[in-house]
Image 1 (cartoon, rainbow, N blue to C red):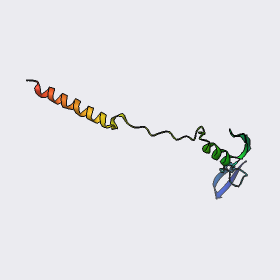
Image 2: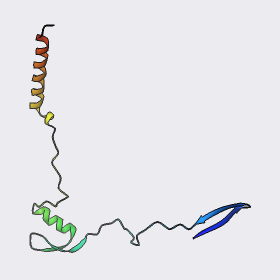
Image 3: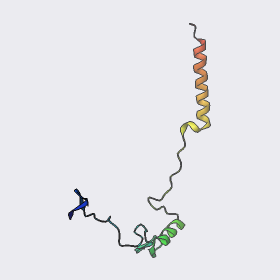
Image 4: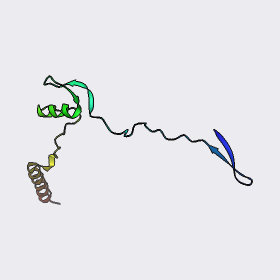
Length: 102
């Protein structure tokens, strides 16, 4: 709905109806519930709690897809073997450069 209102004599303004922002009727819309439909774990029992389901899986040594922690990658140049190899190749290059006659 659009209305025309007079702000001061001879000065008009269009007043538009604004819609309120979309809000959830729930009191805490960003909270994830711990409840889930009964799900069977590999031990043959059914669990309705996500926390209990995950605890049993961890106790049995299972990895939940998406929650695994990858091993940190190590740079190839960080090893001592790479450092000594790099030092020897630089030493060879310097010796070859110095042995040249100009």
